[in-house]
Image: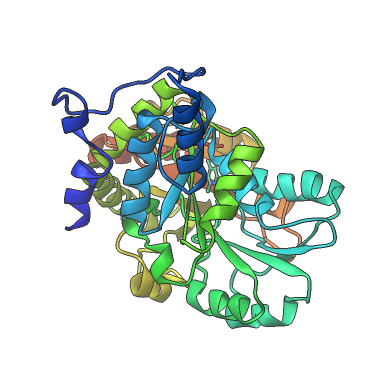
Amino acid sequence: MKDETKLVVAGRSPEDNFGIVNAPVYHASTVLYSTLDELQQRHKERSEGKQVVTYGRMGTPTTWSLENAVAEIEGGYRCQIFPSGLAACAHAIQAFVGAGDHVLVTDSVYGPTRAYCDNVLKRFGVETTYYDPLIGSGISELIKSNTKVVFVESPGSQTFEMQDIPAIADAAHKAGAVVIMDNTWASPLYYKPFEHGVDVSVQAGTKYIVGHSDVMMGTITATKEHWPAIQACANLAGQTAGPDDVYLAQRGLRTLSVRLKQHMENGLKVAEWLKGRPEVHSVLHPAMEHHPGHDLWKRDFLGASGLFSIQLKALERPALAAFMDNLELFGMGYSWGGYESLIIYADPSSYRTATKWDNTNPLIRLHIGLESPDDLIADLEAGFKRMNAIK
Ligand SMILES: *Cc1c(COP(=O)(O)O)cnc(C)c1O
């Protein structure tokens, strides 16, 4: 089956639910058993990896509808949901490390994942080394005997460097390290991590899976070999998500292919227009030919999402504010992946440690939503007018 079809059918079982199309929302904590035999039998089956109901926290048919669909589309063995994308990033790492271990994390990683490493991992005696996202197979020189995890994110949060994931995975595997990828940008649809050497893939489901800016959700999908560590970590740490949110996430997933196609098309149209503007220093969009990571994107990815950054030519803060304030269609706010367009300022030079980022040309991240790109362009054009009036 093609991905578009999988998105429609995966994880659904109307035949188990009176023919009703979508998975029911099971609100559950206590689960009742009629006999001691049944209680012990179900727990035994669950310990063997079967999807049986034992207690609310351990999953219900609502949970599995999302987990099974994500696992199938991303191409992994099984999936575990988490209450946020960050919880998924944190537990993916936590599942494979202990005191005295070392992890390698890309310098372009999502900021809160970095904060988790610097604060929590450090307190538990796990050392983090950040590496140049463009390092490729050179990562082998940074791998130590206690390196348990190599964490990749491509393209990088805010800065959009493309990583050579197969090369990095190859070096990591030679040293026995687990490769974890934050695959949020491409979603399970436009990058197939397990075909490129990734062992564990994280999604901030909050973004394109949910797709409507109204739910926090995270997923971890793993290979068969790495699945038991993920499931154990989630269960031991009590990770679960509420059924209404899980329901909304599986509902959003069904339309991912049409939404993403439009985000990509609109995003490229706006990005091309921005590239021709005199106010713009550079456009950081891996699906555009001039991008230094374009060849990697073309080699490994099946599409692009609607998220990219631009660097404006150096300007004073009032001019920057005049551009960003009062946009009509671009909301100013964090997160992304909903149907609406967003704009946010970021300064990567403030957090990079392995590489230097020059912020002379201020970085603005854009999420291009499902509005008409012509209207979005007109909105940005009016912003540039306000900006130029102040300069
Ligand atoms: C948003 C985001 C996360 C975190 O997801 P939340 O659901 O907001 O916790 C992780 N990684 C990337 C790349 C993200 O953009």
